[in-house]
Length: 228
Image (cartoon, rainbow, N blue to C red; front, side, top):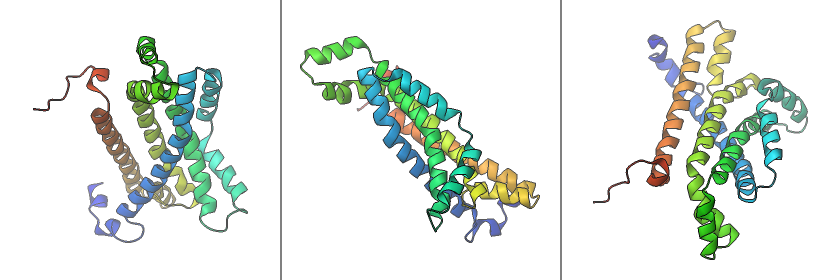
């Protein structure tokens, strides 16, 4: 296994490990951004107003049950005649990844807002804050731990599932697994799986660090940061 990783040919060229990692990160980042743009506002709205709780629960469960590989193949067939370039494969892949990532982001945002102490909201309302001020000044900061939890879950799902992009001739670390399987190169397949796992854990650790810096120590029951 170490011989495969230390082979210089695997670190240079258009199909090298660094290029595949960057492609994997690009697909994952775009999908995560789009999922946040959809799931975060919906979760905040439902948590703040209490409207549509049953609807988002049903939608989230339905999206979680979608078969990723079957859906991406179906979408490629549908989008193939529409796009004449690689977009015929990129767009279906991104749609599948976004559909997978929206449920944890949406439910995490909703659960975070719903878990805010009503007494805190009443106090903010008593101070004369308007509904949007209550949402962004009070509820959103208090909900950050659960929002980050949903974001981390979505990120792990996206990075691990982005390997299916290789099934439709795209790049990313899935290429090592698919190509290795076609060539009966089990070292290459194992290397692809290891790299996906390392990449997922690294990104998860980075989000965890950002969460620790962003969330108020009082919400996580950890000692406050020293400034002196």
